Image: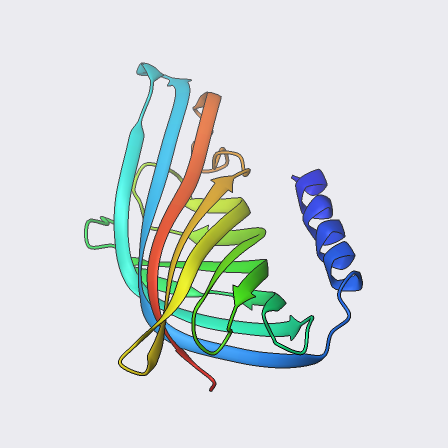
Length: 199
């Protein structure tokens, strides 16, 4: 996990240093997002060998915040520090807390007119917490990759994005000391639609 984060930070600083910035642009927005949490585990306990799987779709609200540096006077090449904080409601939770959240931090590359139409992709890391039962703390932490399109509709700018987070964190062994884990896969697939401000 540490090596992955170090690689992300290294790539970020290499990318920043390679750009001769001619200006900065701050953008933000709000929208809707669907986070699909996926948990797959294998463990042995007093009941024997278990292979639980949970795939749960959690709808919610997402906020966009990005600070872009553009590399040319035509503003068609950008690199940004971006985040898309998400909060959702998990209706099927048996836990008292039914809220889920995600906080990604990304280095995002944008090509096109940042005030109109363009495409983007990003790499970074994300931390998420869910209330999905039987999977301990429900945490997913790890690298994230995302991409999408920005386009105008009736004079408004909309961004559509897809993202995937691969969970690197171990199972919540402290919550289930009787379990001996042999496998734990965690991840999140996100689909979002955002109305972008800042023009």
